[in-house]
Image (tube, rainbow, N blue to C red; front, top):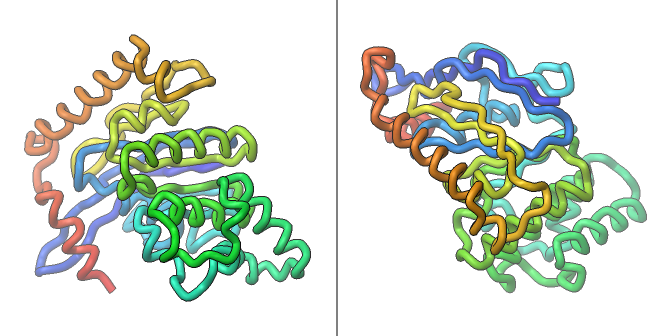
Length: 278
């Protein structure tokens, strides 16, 4: 369903080049839920923007269902971390969810059906007429997720979507994503900086190196498919997987300056150079 092939991204700015992504290759099969985790500043968001067609890679390619991604593809939806910036404050919940559907010209009846179903599956069936500023942070992120669900994507990319909510809400949203994944059969790539979340959610966890980024490990998460916040997280196997991912990320940080990574810039330069690019 989704192939990343020899992906490289180099930013140019401040009279020098910074190699953010060096050579990334991995694939995601149809219907998989895969998490992606790595050290802070390793280029996770840069990778996701390239995959979503929002940023042009320097080299390599992203393939969706056998076709190269050269711009935002019609079969893909993205949920961002900053839900407050992705929702329009002057629109009610229903209009926010319906907004991307208008390009499809489905007709009012079908549009209404998709919006109502999406709000129902995220637990906001009674919030049609509320505005985002009237909702909690967790509820606003549910609206953003509902908007993606209503779009009926084949692939859902999620960029640290729960980083700005409290721990209790985060746990509820994690379980919501797994439930939606089961019910809708959508392919999900979930980018996170939280190690526990990367282990709890996915069937696989792709661990990235420090910048310039390569795939350090593609780890199978061999936990039972039925998961819950209490029993899964307290299991011996969860603790083992969590420790393994943590060790890999620490190893990536310590190897950032070795001889194989000559010319690596400080990861904080990634954001500065992103901002300098038109």
